[in-house]
Length: 124
Image: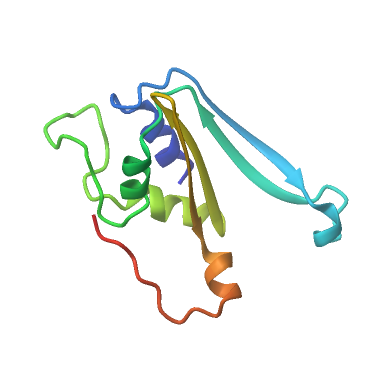
């Protein structure tokens, strides 16, 4: 799952030269653990993406990669979503490209808090 995030950052369309992975601890009172709740933070210096691309990326089945380009992995548009949901219950994406800043959220916590028994997933 972590490898998926690193591979995405190194794809030619993102062109990250540095990928940083850290664990941050937050909200110790809620967990009863003095360190707090762990958060995995992955940051890169890639080119980012537009709001439209982020929305599509968070949709199942979206893949804008050239199938003939052997420098990339992924063809089906599910790796980011399934990979991040294996790492944790929620993923928050911050990105910026060409002066436009965007935030995206995938959250099992949100759905469970609302007792959602159906989830409608946009298909790109």
